[in-house]
Length: 473
Image (cartoon, rainbow, N blue to C red; front, side, top):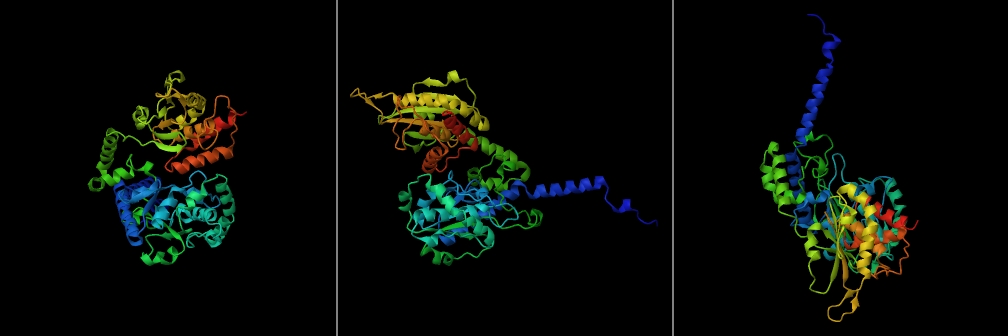
């Protein structure tokens, strides 16, 4: 029998290609929609156990955290970014202040913030670093005479002492950036009785009520809960379990959202993998066909309200309390500028969708500000006395989501149409505009505090800044 040659031993190029394809198919099957939903269900059970044992309310760190919390158990949402905790890029966000959590923490003597992370990491940077920075900065601002609470606390098994030291060196700068926003610290301080203290829970930890006993005597605990257990190897070794299964939904969910998942959990988990995309498409279509509930208008500044386009009919309806409302709708289609003004108190601006709309906003803002200024400056005739009045004039700004473009326009109007944060209307004679990054940031801080769920995109805020700053050149 002739000896084997090298060609007989080494796989051919075709064989290697087939082998790679097999591995890819195996990985894809392990990352199936079914496995993701089952993994989310598994992790949600752990999250509920944490809430039951510790007796604290659940807060979802968006976008991922809501997948792991039954909506009936969810107290609210938080917005702490992992990128603000990346090594060397630590940041206290002056845009996402999360002040609304202070009331939740004070009322319940703490809270549990839920998030997850991708395979290989023990916990997300949002929980291990961003939230600890937030706690320390707020403690410095609200409890200046309690120096022991100013110390940065991070999980030692995740954050090295060297990195913790570098983070600590930036805390004074973060405090300065917060105070520059001129927040109402006295109102925040009234909502809590003790400083904040982060601590961490993962599926690898032992859960006991006693773990909070020592902390709660002196601090409000902010429990950072990582919902997914750590997978060190590949998913193929985990019998279908996927760490951080609720993340990167744009790559697997087919439009499925956390609320839709929880509302149709049994049906989704009982459906074969091959039929899931079709079922999800049907659920999403039915949800959209059912129509968006009439959105509630959110007051973000004196006289200024934002909401979804679905609230337009409510905003335009005659008021029973003497309010006169100007409505600006930012619609997801492009329309000619000449068609925007529908009446003296109704404007419909066609900007298009997504990033295109955010870019076009820059060109539309002069017209929007001029339209709203004219409405605000014209005295409204009182039906009984015939006198003019301004006190009941309000502006409703509507966009598709109620959280992006409408918030950007509210920021522009807040700076352009009002003299101060009390809502004093700038008169036609007082057209002096003096905007800078600091003053714009202060107004944005007011809006984000009033409406924590607001989510103006970077492109939207860039358009607003460009309009306000370029006007002076």
